[in-house]
Length: 248
Image 1 (cartoon, rainbow, N blue to C red):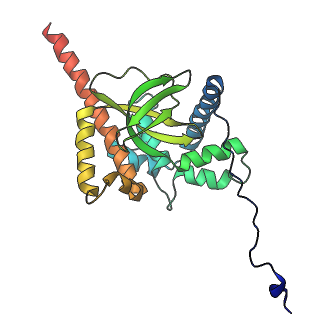
Image 2 (cartoon, rainbow, N blue to C red; image 1 turned 90 degrees about the vertical axis):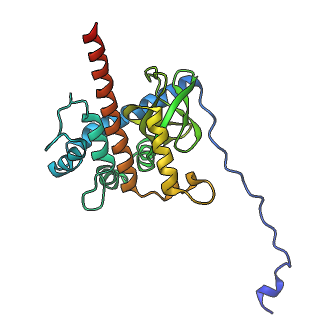
Image 3 (cartoon, rainbow, N blue to C red; image 1 turned 180 degrees about the vertical axis):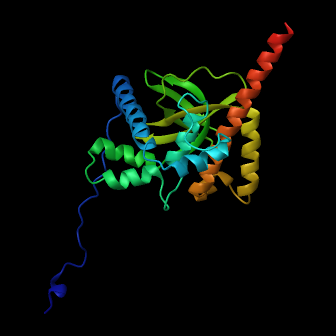
């Protein structure tokens, strides 16, 4: 007689064990966690920018209209160009961040591995700050995906009426943070862009669910265009203020 014939007709199974989620940190712990991650991002950006080839700076710089080579650190477009160079520009099919992660992941400690995951899951958000979340940031509404999340950026300047922030954001447990480059756009410009995006992705159902199918290159174009437009709007506003002062 086979072993199978001796087996009970119904097998007993152990009850499934629910995965226990980590406890929600205190406000002080969240403030510390978010500041650690912002420091990691700033430190890593500074390390990686020196590894980008001159061609990378040139290719991205041309789109911003800054000519050849890496722009000066004090240039108003430097932070935007660097952001796109490190997260979007691909050499041999990979971005600077992807190459850095591949070379470092085997020796990285848990904290840095978490930062690597966040860097690979970056996305673009158009948002307005809402309720302040104690010492570590704000609850914000992302107009692109029509959803709310906690953004660990405690020092966001006050947003003028009729304007929206645009930034690349990275997800961590309990909150998101920016890649350190935050621009401001008129809300009317963002609404026009969203209407255009809805037309491009439109069809039956909620067009926002198709955002996950947008390619990395398309996201690069999206944030690039948003940054360039924000610089244009910023320059236009400065010119208007200058002209108004000249009349007085």
